[in-house]
Image (cartoon, rainbow, N blue to C red; front, top):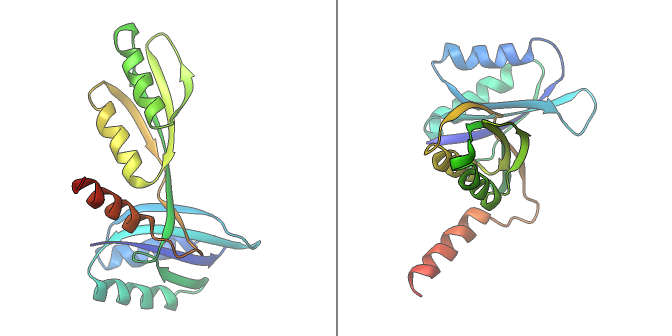
Length: 176
């Protein structure tokens, strides 16, 4: 199972190296990684996705707490969160297919950030499912390059789990 961990660390050199080293020594691959300043000066938030069972993830969290500069670790996998990723995608877009690509971009509320006679670069922001879906559709055209950020996440204080809402709406649609 894929887990999402939110780690608050002191913003000092070598912290990310020690954390990634911990995962590497235990044979874990980090599927997604995003690091940036947190709400307080001198503190950074690391958001990472890693695969493993619950027991293994609990052990990793305990090991993370043993590292200096780690202030807080939270497994936010089953907590209602807002999740976002950013993707830049360059697509071969000549006259014959450009309107189809622009229609897809419009549906996914992607922004055209560069435009030339042969290529479009789109900026797409959204939850990981949205990023995956637009990439799958654009695979029908010639994708030249992709750059993606790691997933970032914050806990919803409203405790509204939009994933459960999506599931209930799709289940209701089955009965219509």
